[in-house]
Image (cartoon, rainbow, N blue to C red; front, side, top):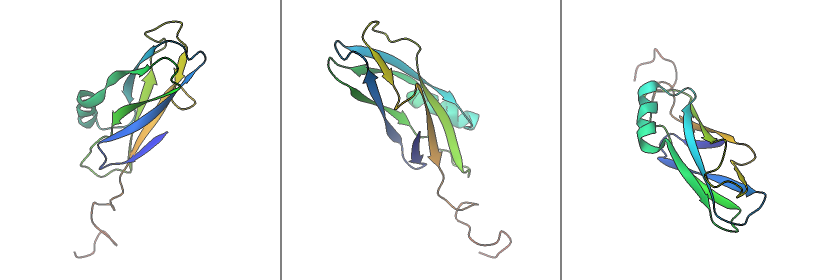
Length: 126
């Protein structure tokens, strides 16, 4: 899992290469919506919906940068998933994982009080 504050634009996601480290390994990744409001998710897709992670010969780690949803409405969190394609673009060059898995959950957390900026009782005078 990756957790980021909602006012963060991007977060780095580490990947590990497993198996044989020889040769160049390219693996495509893509995102899938969890519970993000549709118009916010569409904006997220325009920013960074997919890409390719590259491990050069001998490298065991790499990172991808994924966008953090910027939702102006108050909610506790926004969730989407980062998946690796089933097969790498470079066959027979080892394998890659997102941490210890092939799918990563990306949470952005709203740290503002509900409703945004209000404290105490909802019927209290400002």
